[in-house]
Length: 637
Image (cartoon, rainbow, N blue to C red; front, side):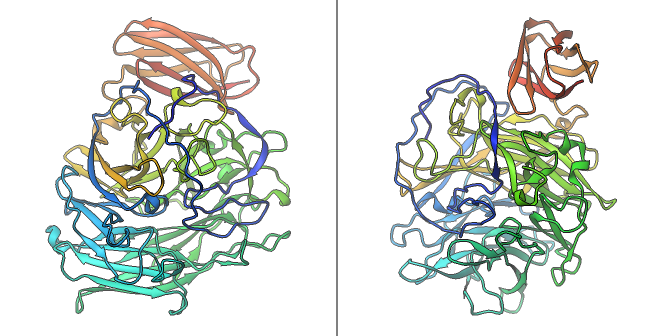
């Protein structure tokens, strides 16, 4: 499912000339904000079907030998549209991978929810585990996780748990959320349907950031209020499931949480974003509930930044954490650009993912851009890009009580929406997600993006997504190189990607479970789901220089002077002879210079860059050797 390209030129990156809101049109049908207003959530609204993209010849040899293994099919792709759903998970003790999806059974029109299971690293899949099979109420938008009793190593003694919203018998309206569980040996099935308004806290759309701990299962829902067009209040329903050994079922309880969002002086609507992330450590005692919105304490009270609540008593109470000046982190401030009336204050987009590492610290995956201005009327607005999706970050709490940040990279191809060019009437996003090793010492970042060779003006949409990945050791801060996992093998054919919250380790190899899916020519065709086997990293891939890795001819890159004025000299140490070039980009993503060294010998090579004509500011240069590259920062004064 690919686009016939009009041009194979590398896209030039340009910065938007107007301030736009940082609420994006998402592929689940949630509308973008207009002004300070948040549009009401509208689900399963289908745009007219358009032309299916044609194929394109693969041109890039990827860094990993990835195999795409067919798992199964779903009735249609609509259950794949939410990046906040937990459709893929794994368990280290059981060596089990689970993919949760709607069924394809024509007799039930995809109303059942299935957890497909692999016990051999994704080579084969059991697709017979129907966890939710209510005869009356159709299920949609599932999340799924694995609950394993402490000390158990037999997969047949573990449970698959799923949740999501369900429709009324006619399929015409949402009436609540389902919570279902099934033992892996296909016994002890339990289905609970909780209707909206029948419990202390309403239950609606229980599908976000589902996860399990040693003693509990967690998933967020919303009880947001609206006036028919706009949200007037955000309310989160925290759903907690605890296994009952007497009944072999999960007892589910609901707790309502209302974020401390101030109201807009202009509209009276809450100053924040939807869909908070929830995450816990292994014991299920210490956890975080992370929102993005206006923080009333701290240095910056005008931008949308993390508003985080912490629990140390398994969710019984939640305490708001102090505000923080995220502009004080150079990893973030270096990526901010003031354009027009813009300001060098970070503005966070929607939370893409959350997790807790080995030290009990929270990690938040999000895009960060520059706030639109310092004026209160522009709260919630930020500068957006016209030719890239944006800059990806992992911001995390520290043991000292502050925050840190990891710059993950640029996502080049823009999100495809139903309003985009040549779509199925539905779209897909970059799925910037995180996965961690079972011990929490390694954090991996995985996302989908189109090779810049296949991006063309004026749309720059990510019609041909590949799967990219990199990782960091949270204790040593050593990083891996970023790799294109599917280039050359499954070039540009990876849609609705999901990454497991848990990475499996065997010896010195970390295997990140990843799935992608495809559909037919129309949005009602069945969706085919695939497991990408081979998205792996080795212990030796975590190195001092994040660009160095096994088989990469670039041993080291330095430039001096830095900062510079008239020139800088880039020193590249190659372990073997390679084609060598340098691309220089400004902070708006525009390529301002390209130098081709040609075929360079192994050893130290020097490339002199004339910077006398460049404006003062921060630049990034990318050194390319063959199919490998390293990007570093350059300051011109």
